[in-house]
Image: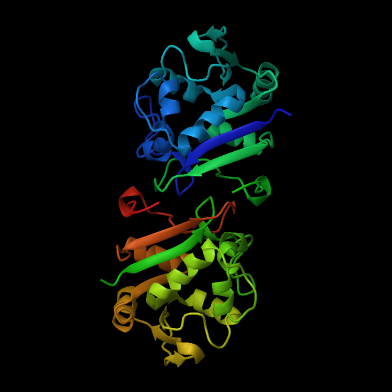
Length: 188
Length: 188
């Protein structure tokens, strides 16, 4: 059975990005430290067309996350910020559904990624991603606001948090407004 | 060299206790889940005079934390709430300095714990704990407000956080008001 999942790094104070985010600072101040564990892996660097990286248990974790996903959902800001850093063959290599208010034709990229722009809401984006995923899982990739919308709507079946030993102080709090009834423990 | 340290569990949203704390609910709603890993250990249960518990890596961690501490600092609320749950021979077996506004004579308990009541502030309590610790470390035990006061004053040399896979939604946020400049990574 195909699953809807989230897999994301958070700081000790529950942020996935730091303060002062913007086009030139997509992760916000200090936010790189939250996701560095992933950016260091050989798998992820290869996916964004960069050399180097470490073969490690983390590397296998990241590879598995991408391997299980047959479709992705992104918020518009994450898409726009990602475009700057991703190579022409974007890292997904699968259909990606971008939440937006601006209609746009599908945008196929080299390597198997096609971006589809969805203007009729999160449920529609998820349904389209599930239909396109070919029986594989759907990853709600981010950013924080997008993930929170799906969590609050009860549409996420599994969330994996990678807690980084970093304190941001402020920023995009992933779990703000959610409570114990919204999450249950599956596995540590 | 003697060190001032904090060693405490936190939820995924950075709380050491849940909402609705009170005399009959010292950890707040859901707060037990944050500290359960410790309450399950054979070492801690023995320290509070209860049978059972697990011998595990967690058990060794808790034992080491108590072994290194020669003195403790507690906030008044934690002391008062603790009194209800601790046996006559309180779990510290060392001098404990309680921050309070109400003068009170030292209160020796069976088993080596003596509570001293400090009315002239956090620096005084720490200095007294250091003097009494016999070269061992001083643990700032809690609660959240007490730990935060010491962190903000720059008086904590080491903090260990045990992140529990629990979401509380609200409660006593340990790191509220602190930022990246206040904490650096020593060890993961």
